[in-house]
Length: 103
Image 1 (cartoon, rainbow, N blue to C red):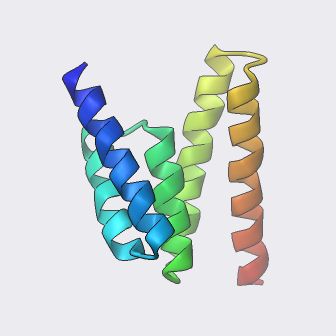
Image 2: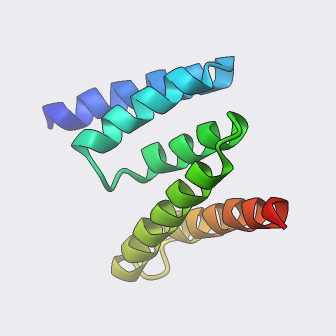
């Protein structure tokens, strides 16, 4: 439980950094969360967004693809869960956007 609370605090910090435009700093904090909780969808999504805004399109694509795989895995265990269905659509949209830019 303590690890989850720490990760929750770290996620809040990372999202705040991202909103303030400190995308490199946010990437570091998102990566720390993923270091202790590799399947954290919020951290993956935030990392992908921060990478994209920073111009690391290949890193963002890779991160979003990992995020989509985890969301799909979670959705398989939670069929019909609106939360995971929405996340699946959001992550797929980010992937499609990045692939369109690459053309």
